[in-house]
Length: 79
Image 1 (cartoon, rainbow, N blue to C red):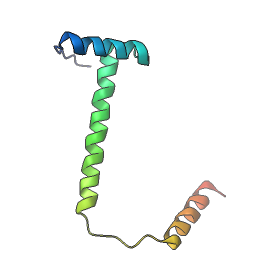
Image 2: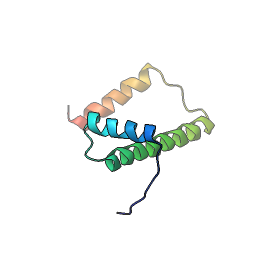
Image 3: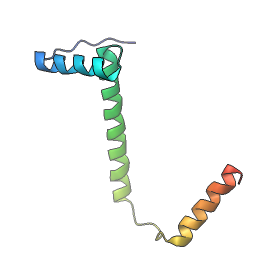
Image 4: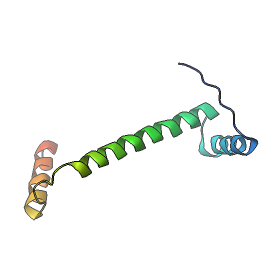
């Protein structure tokens, strides 16, 4: 694992320390890693939404579509 040093103003360091203490993180590094992972997830979701928004419209979704979807799920679940 690589290391990275960051500089924070006192107010942000205090905030990070409070989050570590109150939210059960072992270290400030764990807290920062989680923030980075969440940002990665957010960026991935945004890319997927933009991709979907730029794609052509699909078939209309109606009651029959959801009934078929439920049936597929039931078959996979074995019941």
